[in-house]
Length: 342
Ligand code: ADP
Ligand code: MG
Image (cartoon, rainbow, N blue to C red; front, side, top):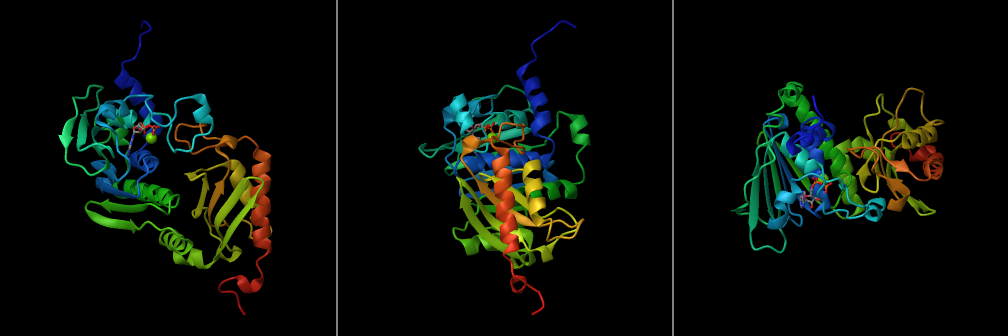
């Protein structure tokens, strides 16, 4: 075959292979967009495990009519404009890939009303690159992305979807993970018209604690330590489970770097080491922790889904985490431990 330029929709479908693995990945990308848009309330409606429909409605800043089509085209983003911006990016997105990728593997309806516009507009996609002109739509300020029949045009992918229950389980996990990253935002999740999660926006520590309890269980909150420590421009805060609250699996471990949920070897290693003296071998700690640092010290452009990060000064971050957690755990006197014999 001669060398040829691939058509745009095929390029998007190939990119979708990286960012859209399953319905939960669509939910992740759309929720991140809603958060980046400054939303304070987000409603998520799922039908049939997301295979039939994923609809996310937010009350953020919205998209101007003139930019709707651009939002669905590849490498188009409002979040960065230069390498300099990329190096200090604070938004969750910046690659301009999610919407075009999702649009290339589903039937998509993008409806939005910009905060300064007198009305809303919507645009349809059918998995191809051609979209008609936007049509007027009744919409409050904000955006609704309706993703119908995910993978309808990629039978091989569609076949890999698991049962409704399993896919919805992944969606729930994703929503919980993102809901822990922003206590000031309300989330509502419905599956087949039934509400499964409702989290009100909160603005103080006890509200945050309630949300952590809703997501991780009240036993975790009762048997955890709240910490907030800052040194050398690094801040670590959140809840660490007492050694008595150890788990047989590493299933209650949430770590955020500048509000972005990450899975990172360096972080896991530092946490594990901090718990080493106080936890039996083979047991896993539980934690909900937030690391905040200058965005220039962390490279989030390491992977398309951005779940991996690279620290410019890995050693420093590792030592800060280890020392802070180790000290916090060492400071626990036996009487502090909930449920400990008195
Ligand atoms: P990225 O998030 O990397 O910029 P996306 O493909 O996810 O790329 O979105 C493209 C653009 O569409 C965003 O940069 C943003 O301007 C706009 N957009 C997407 N979703 C929303 C939303 N929920 N509210 C407001 N604007 C949005
Ligand atoms: Mg995005």
